Length: 135
Image (tube, rainbow, N blue to C red; front, side, top):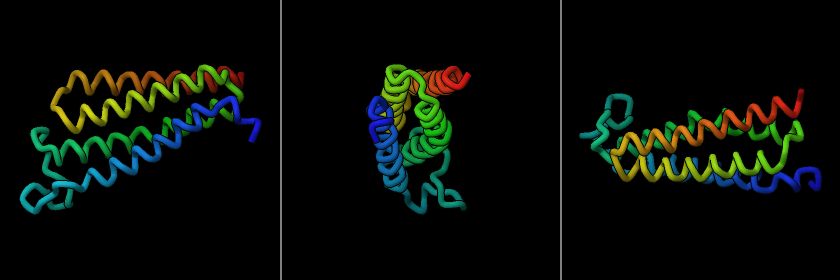
């Protein structure tokens, strides 16, 4: 695996992302009661409810998993700059951990949006880095 040694931080970021997604999956079910569930079993939309915010944090993680994993793996396999790939993947994971904490513990929409934007910019950067390495 020496070919990927330069990307250790990015690979670690992928592993941490997997663990974070699993933790959020478990948290998304905590606090569900018949009174706060809709017919489909999901919490009723109410940002004042921590149960709803947990569910949304997990759903948001699922929504960005594909693009993050694809962009990171594409950049690694294309041989993009290890420094950039490691930096962007690591910042993405840190921003998403912050976003999960903010999403679950507060109703602070602007802060949640900022942490989301940081992760989104990192994913775009990873994709552009991968494209640049291929061209």
